[in-house]
Length: 252
Image (cartoon, rainbow, N blue to C red; front, top):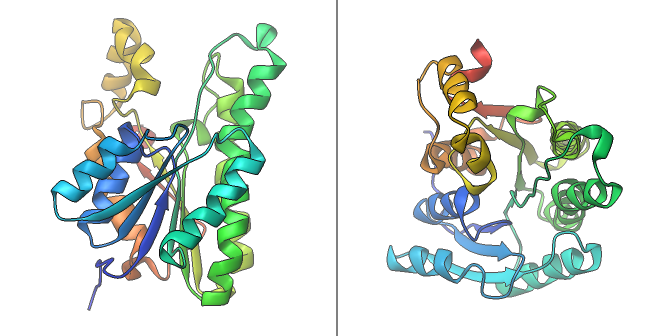
């Protein structure tokens, strides 16, 4: 029997204050998980936690600057101490900086890589050690359409998302023997703060929609089914995979 229930499971979701992270947190909670919602600022996830509690779910919040390795490591320890072992880790927190490659500041490059890539590795390493002891766990990284292509004026973001896809495979190779599944979700063009500039560019937005067979931008709720699947026992034989949730964008 296929089992999508997350009853009794504990999940940590980074970047959970709004947008995709909030939608993923709500979906996991609705499937029965206790969700530890992480954001960069103390109190940043209060709204997400309130929404989960209002629907009968269970959640609490932690915070850390994802560009600060020490804070990220401390947050992992705090999260594991709150409700015991973490069964599901969702590395969603991210940032983007737009500038031509010739003018891209090194400081911005390093910041984007620290937030998008380093934090995912630090959390996966810390929580992965515990999952190995448990002999079970689910790690879900958030990739991107720019895990497949180069983009324009976002070299650091593109590099980080290609690396996330590679890290997903690397960890799956090492940890599959411990009944740990490491997969990724590559959202298509989803309406969030990160894509607001593209949404506001009428020409570019029209070009994007013309390529998507579904004929529309995605909503954050469109990712709910994917995260519950990859967090549940239904995906126990899926490992090292990047699941595109893109309305068919990559098919064209």
